[in-house]
Image (cartoon, rainbow, N blue to C red; front, side):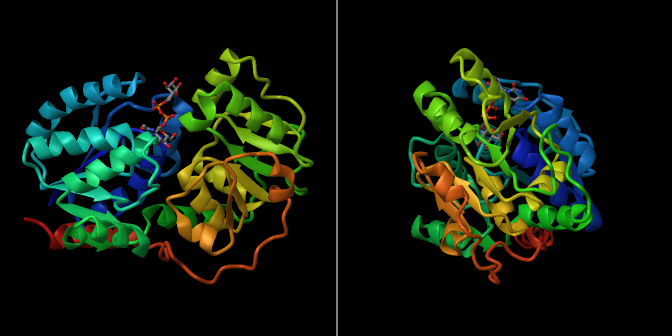
Length: 354
Ligand code: UD1
């Protein structure tokens, strides 16, 4: 079986790692196409190195741009690549512009399309990711769902017949890396003692970064927290803060570049908690036993909230109180699987081969 994976943004490299490994183990041919949506070394190359992902076979080098320009550039470059390889499955991941471009390109060329991390919903139509994931699910021949909640969403949209519950592949990676780094001391910015309380934070969503007032409120609230905040700054956050004159070094903030995956897992494992607007990090915090505060109105990973490990806070007025809340009761439920989702994904691709 020949699988062609299309990835381009940081969280997709993490999801690709266990899939690439499982495909190789099962003896399948795997072509990796990198769209170039993320291109900084810290946003892309380090993931391939740290997670032992084979170098991409094709790199489209698309780079940044408005949604239409970026997605359109990927689309026009993908036709030739898909035509050359004609895989048994085109596999797309998550909900980025690289996902929707890969999905559209595959279906237009009548190539079977599988969507990994299908069925997630925020029900927030202002989010670009919500359009990307809904449209991709409806285009896909096979919807590979990470949770029962995701299967239920697909069923309600009439896609139950194409849905398979495989578990969450990010859990595969997260648990594997956590076992490797559990006993190591995390590399934190100067002035942060890894043996004392600190928080890990990431802010990158357009809803939070692109409105200067909202961004200032968030940064001020983080800076006023009573313990150090290791702020892993996405390039969008750095750019938007600079253009609005917002200081990322004030008060409790200890700002640093994005970390590689193992360093990020180590930092979260030893932290007092996480403050983020990332989807993946909410779930990683849950898996690593760090209470999470999510600066959004809703989450796709509702199990983290239901089990008491994640609190949603779109407004930051009482942030100190919320992030310093007592630790919740340890969760025994495993809504994201036990770290075998990549194998289940490969099995589903084999079973549903046309
Ligand atoms: C994208 C995804 C988002 C995902 C996130 C993970 C979409 C619509 N959004 O958002 O779902 O959670 O990736 O990080 O696909 N930039 C750089 N260097 C890079 C990449 C980006 O400087 O390597 C800067 C550019 O100024 C760019 C901006 O970051 O315009 C935003 O990048 P983009 O890929 O458009 O979206 P993300 O915010 O990263």
